[in-house]
Structures are given as structure tokens and as C-alpha cells.
Image (cartoon, rainbow, N blue to C red; front, side, top):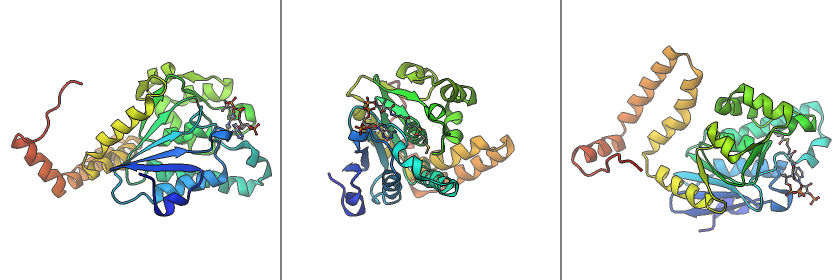
Length: 264
Ligand code: 1HE
């Protein structure tokens, strides 16, 4: 179903909903989905205006590539102050992705480079098609990451691998990305979206408070000392457990009405 309201006004995104899942497609294929100021603002607007009934989001890219990163044609015009604010604008948008209301599944194909990799790293689950490849060409362009990549990407693959990408211009293919757990799922070309949507529908069946805890508590606990982390965990667990939904779900299991955990 096509999106309505403010989401329907975002001309660089194609947004559709399938029940509780919203599919947001970067829709600037002529420029390989390069992220202009307008596009970053539209991503931000979309994520802070998700309809109430949406429980999970899938992000993908139209055309042959997921995303070519920053729109380099807009970079030349900025002074230092403007550049700081520009980077902060990206931070706000990708914070809305990572720390919004619902989990986000990225479906990746073709180039996932520069700011495109920064966007992918703000998502919670990553699916890569065979064609996907990952790089940080900022080093070659004479710039640095500015979309949160230096904070997020080392948390996924480590400082050493990110340094290698930036210093040597190395590119990881989908196999390498999977080996280093940069991507969680691999599919053949053309099958990523179906897998991503299926995962999003599965995520959408979880209790919202459990999903919230995974999105908001887990990465913060990972940043805390063990003692602070354990305390945060106890508080988060108590909040989740005390929701009526948790009580209902626990009772359903105990009464034999809930699914068991089985080998997939
Ligand atoms: C662009 C951009 C872009 C394509 N900004 N216009 N990102 C990069 O350094 C990656 C630069 N792009 C590429 O390496 C390639 O374009 C791709 C490998 C992604 C795709 O190649 P291809 O052969 O399919 O397409 P193309 O012919 O290179 O590009 C088609 C058009 O898109 C062309 O414009 P046209 O007017 O000549 O048709 C390209 O100029 C344009 N295009 N990528 C502007 N990135 C917050 S900090 C984040 C910092 C970064 O992200 S730095 C990394 C930037």
C-alpha cells in the first residue's frame, strides 16, 4: 500500500506499507542513490513520522546499487561551520534510524559505499545480495566519514578493518562482509528484498518493548562497564517483564499456546 500523509510528499523515497512493515526505498537511481541534503532530510523525516501501526522497517535502494554515499556534487560549496552542521544533520537522521521506535532491516546490493555503508550500519539487521560490496572511499576523496561511520562501523567490524577500508581503498565483497558479521544474511541477487521483508514481518511479531530494549538498551550496555551494564540490564529487564504484553505471552507459553523454539 502506498504511503500517505507526510511520507507521500518525500519524492526521493518510495515508501510502501505491508501491514506492520514499512518498506522505504532510496529512489534516486540516476545518481546511484547518492545522498544529497534533500535525501538525508527526507530519510530523517520518514523515520520520525512512521505511522503508529508500523512495527518494523525495511530499507533498500532502487536501481543497480544500494547507495553511492554522500552526493559529492554538493560538498564543494561548504565552509567549515557549514560542514560541521552538515555532518550533524546526517547524525540526526541516522540516529532516527538506529534509535527510533522500530527495528530496521537493510537490504543491500551493488555499491554500499561511504555514506551508504554508514546508513547500513545504523540499521539493526543487514541482508546482502551476492552483488553487494562495501567500501569507504572517503580516503581517496580527501574527506573523512561524517555520517556516524567512525562511531558505528568499528563497533561492527573493528577499528583495524575500518582503517584498512579507508587507508587502502580496500573493498569487501558479500562473502567477506558475512565472514566478519557485517551482514547477517546472504541471498542470491534479486532475493534480498523478500528475505528482508520476511525478517521484518517476524520482527514485527515481537513485543514492542522487547524490540525497544534490543534497539536502545543493548548498544548502550555494550558501551558501559560491566557493573553499569548489568545494572542497566536489570532495569530494562524489569521494565519489559512488567508490561501486560509480557505477562500475556508468558502465560500463553505456560498454557501450551505459544510456539516452541525449534531448529530452522
Ligand atoms: C554521484 C555519486 C556520488 C554516483 N555523488 N554523484 N562516494 C563515492 O566516492 C562513490 C562514488 N561513486 C562511484 O564510485 C560509482 O558511481 C558507483 C560505483 C557507486 C556506481 O558506478 P556506476 O558506473 O554504476 O555509475 P556512475 O556512472 O559512476 O554514476 C552515475 C551517475 O551518478 C553519474 O552522474 P552523471 O551525471 O554523469 O550521470 C555520477 O557522477 C553520479 N554519482 N555516485 C555524486 N557519490 C556524510 S560523509 C559521507 C562521505 C561519503 O559518502 S564519501 C563517498 C562518496
